[in-house]
Structures are given as C-alpha cells and as structure tokens.
Image (tube, rainbow, N blue to C red; front, side, top):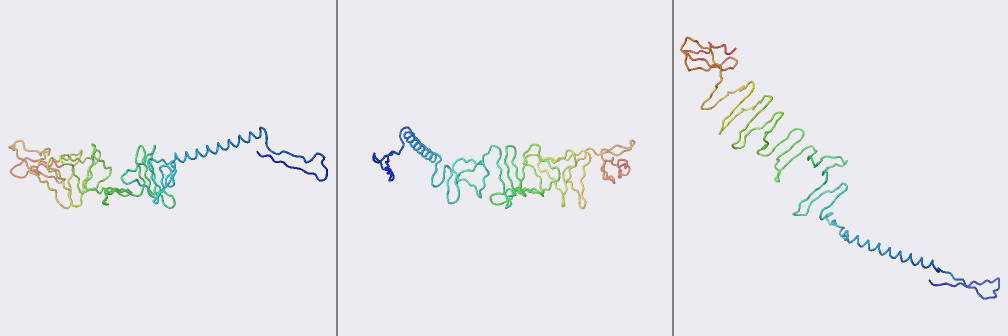
Length: 289
C-alpha cells in the first residue's frame, strides 16, 4: 500500500530540527489479514457465480422458460411428468396431439367446477375405492350427440336400443319398472320372479306373453289371476291342459264314463263334472263353496 507523508508546519513555534514526517498506513499482521479477507471475498464471489451458473444449467433456464416448462403464445407447455403440490387452476388442460393425458395421485383426483362465488357446482372424485360424481344431472352421450344414459333426482334414462344385464342373479327392481318390451338373449330363458311379494304386469292396451321357441311357465304360491276389464283373455294353443282341476261328485250306481265337462262357478272357479245326457254342473255346485 502506498505510503503518504504529511509535513506539519507550526507557524507559532519555531522548529530547530526541520519539518517532522508522520507515516500513515497498515503494516504488519493487519496488512496480511486485509489481503486474506479480500482474497476470501473474491473466492466466495467466484464460487457463488459458479453455483449460479450450475443451477441455471441444471434447471435448464432459457428465455422461453425453465426445465419442462415453456412459455408459449397459447399459454404454458409442460414436457414430461409434472408434479403439483398445491391446487391447479386452469381454463384448459390438454395433451400434445397424438399423446394421452394422465392424472396420477397417491390418494384421489378431484375435479371441481366452481361458480363466481367459488361455490362447488359439480364435483368428480376418483379414489382408491370408488368414483363419485356430484351434480344436478349426469349424462353419457355418443360422439354424434345421442343420449345413452342420464340420471337426475327424478329419473334415470337409458337411451340405448338395448339394455343388457350380464349378472348371474339378474336385475333387482325394488319398486316398479316401465318398459315396452322385455326380451331375453337368443337361446336364453327369460324369468320374471318376485320371491317374497306379488308380480303384477299391467298395460293400457294389453299384455302379450309370447314364447316362440320354448315353453312358458307361470308359477305362484297362492293365486294366479288373469284379468281383463274391457276385453277378453285369449289362450291360443293347439292343446290347453288343466291337470289339477277338482272333480265333481258322481252317482255310484250310474255308468261311469271317462268323459267330463268343464264347469265354471260364480266365483270363477273351474271344475270337472262327469258328463251325462244333460249338463251336470248344477248338480256339483258343492265344489264352488
């Protein structure tokens, strides 16, 4: 360090030995400590600069963005896998053309639709145990816009031409079902069953039961009723059998015949009466009691 010399003259007191010289500066161990701190500061600056350049290189900072994040005219572009630790708010999320869009989470993925007051209008939750959707109406449509399925508080609509239930136990309806046609798959049997209650089929213009390639069987615990208020009940078959009809009484002394006539009681009960020369239904009215 340059040394400065200052000459101090006193005008009031004469000097006999000439002007006095005072040396001002840093000498000895102080000077060496100062040099050491300056060198240490320069090393820290160089290390800090090197670390900054290394971070910029590792994080891939460019003019367009950093890492997998790029800033484009249409918005932000992410390349590769991205992780969001906080909620993500976006107007539109889409993948690159030809690539799929994946959402992965360790617990669940929740999609919320909010209004202006930040109130949840529609919510979709996909969790490890179930997929839950909350909203006023749920719809499934084809690409052309045809309704396949819809559900709201009032009704559930299936818009497909055919509804197939593949479960081994069939379909359970705790209430009523309204449909114009109930049909089984080809070479499969159709069974309508009510294990603990009654089974009622009603239609404003009639009920048609048709088995084109097999048998038709109706079984009940207590009572089977076929009722037509304004029309008729038609049993159209080559052979109609009623094997368990009760038999009316007959005269033991008379000639027994194997010919019977079908009788109807006032309450609608059917019974067989041994045929005679005339009608024997009035004789066997005890069956109607």
